[in-house]
Length: 339
Image 1 (cartoon, rainbow, N blue to C red):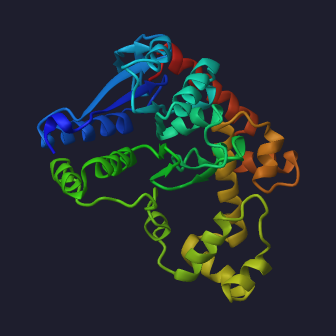
Image 2 (image 1 turned 45 degrees about the horizontal axis):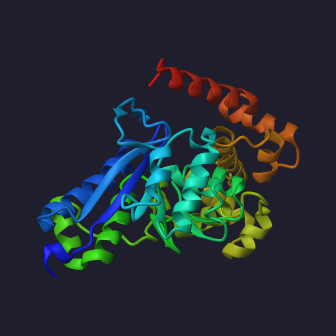
């Protein structure tokens, strides 16, 4: 196939304020390397923002864009219509609400344009109603809040997901993997391997590879029984299991579990279970607008007062103070006082 016969794939990267640079640059650099290996610009892209003005990333770096939302809506009806739109966001994405953006994304999808997201951009796609009944991926840190806010979306802690012309990835280097998948669809495995060699990437990761380190590496725990119990706890946070239920599932006695946790984790299983429930609660408090009482229920607490007491004991501040500090950090980030 000659260069002239290969149809270009055009992309629009829509930048949300405080977007994360790593997934954004990894996606674009992967496409740039593909173009270099091919010897011609098979992939072309432009950057867009709501008002066409520079957008600042979470690291404080400002990026100039090529078009505004009004431009992009106009382009949908002409030769400048893209093949793919990718929403690039990062921290504070839950504060981004724009009905015009939502309408543009829906219109793009309905016109056959692939729509996707980098990092936390799945929030924006979900607000537009595009993820109802769809598989999607988001960064593990944002997954609890996202799952509570958008229960109709099928969210997974995968590197990336592709479902019905909708592409979502978890951020970080996962955007490289999603772009490699796209390049593989367009040009095959040989080009993917050449891009990997240039990017010093030793393998192509599966979309279902882990986002986080395995528990064994993350916790420094080797005992397989303890690891399986922790996995059981992490999958039952909203309705905590009793120690008897855990013991029955693990095929151990309560005394054996107590002894193993003291040896491996330095605390009782009940205390460890409480800590991971409170950790999830902290993520919900800083990444969602859920009322404190709803956060408490989502993390398995029978009352807001008991939840607040446990939270204060672990973090030395109340859930309300945690949320107030989050609002302050958002305000200072917007004004540039703290980057």
